[in-house]
Length: 87
Image 1 (cartoon, one colour):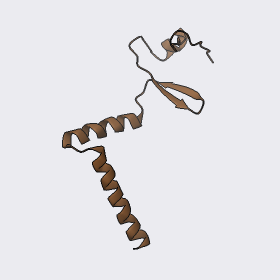
Image 2 (tube, helix red, strand yellow; image 1 turned 90 degrees about the vertical axis):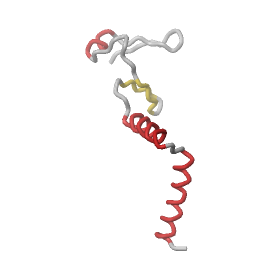
Image 3 (cartoon, helix red, strand yellow; image 1 turned 30 degrees about the vertical axis):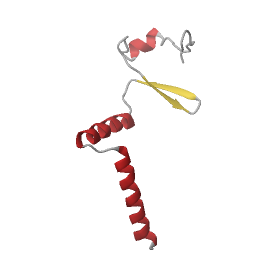
Image 4 (cartoon, helix red, strand yellow; image 1 turned 60 degrees about the horizontal axis):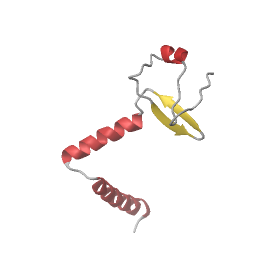
C-alpha cells in the first residue's frame, strides 16, 4: 500500500508506479467519493452521475422541471396509497 502526504491546498501526489500501472497522466480526471471516513479515487464516471446528467439533458430538451417531477411523484404516491390501503 502506498502512502501519500497532503500538501499545499489539499493536493497530493499519486506515486509514479501507480500512475504507470493505471495509465494516469496529467490529463486524467479523477472522481473523489467519500465512503464513511475514507476517500475513494476513481477514473471511471460513476453510474449515478452519468444517469443524472442524461436525465437532466432529457428534461431540458422537453422543458420538464424538477418541480414537475416532484409534483407528479406526489400524485403517484397518493394514487398508490389509495389503491393499496384504500380511502
